[in-house]
Amino acid sequence: MSLGVLNNISAVYAENNLSQTQASLQKTLQQLSSGSRINSGADDAAGLSLANGLTASSTALSQSAKNASEGVDFLQVADGAMSQVTSLLNRAVTLATEASNGTLNTSQIAAANAEYTNILSEITNINTNTEYNGITVFGTAASIYTTDGTLGQTDNATALNQVDATTLGLTAAGFTTQAAATTELGKITTAISTVASDRGTAGAEINTLQAVSNVMSTESTNTLSAENDVIATDYGAATSDLSKYEILMQTGISALAQANSTQQEVTKLLQ
Image (cartoon, rainbow, N blue to C red; front, side, top):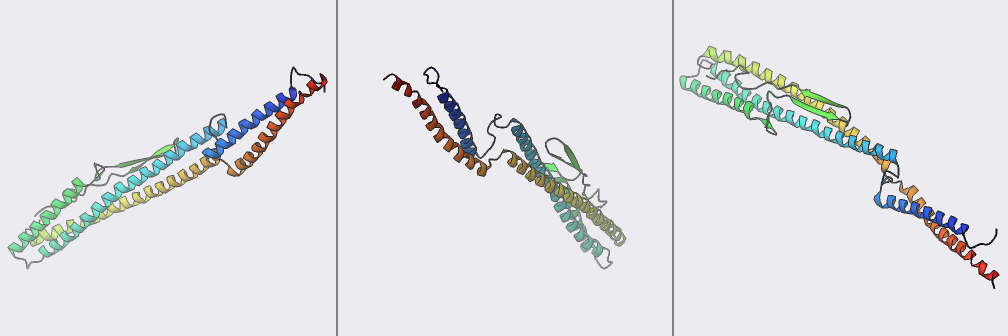
């Protein structure tokens, strides 16, 4: 190769390679410091698009699991209220059975009537005032929406029946006679069966929504794992690249210095 000073091709090659090595080293350091393999669209446009989609899906699935859990909470509030109604009705059974016995005097029957009237009033209060997040639970259908960010569905929980005294077919004061008390006892027994059936309906829907919540949580976890696989830094590979590029930087600097010193040989020809 002839000696010349106009263009130092060796130095140009060395400088270009050194610039590329420096850019690769900076990219590797960014991956190591951020924990992310993709820090801009230039790093991996397709991977970034995929990761963003997976993030959106994971977020939607996570919230969907919470939506289903809130539906479970809504139904559990109703179930707890119906449990209290059942307890009150069981007490009413005792009173009606007592009033059906012909040994009670007038004042005792009046006392049984008074307590029974209070029980029916309390049952109606439970029906009217039991709420979840300001929503009356009885007579209201809980529409639970779940989605993966693209496809969604609504799980409609059946509106729970009213549990007030009128709906249950109970009448305040039927204890006026032994026969009336016996008739009311049959109505109370029927009301207990009705409430038990409603609790069964609520329980079945609670199980369904819990299953939905579990599925959504599992899908969210798996989607998040997939996102991590796409975007997370592979520290084994990155630290290996770091060592490689640090060595290339050192050798590149040495090569550039050597290429620059080669042109100094021209001055020896002029001596």
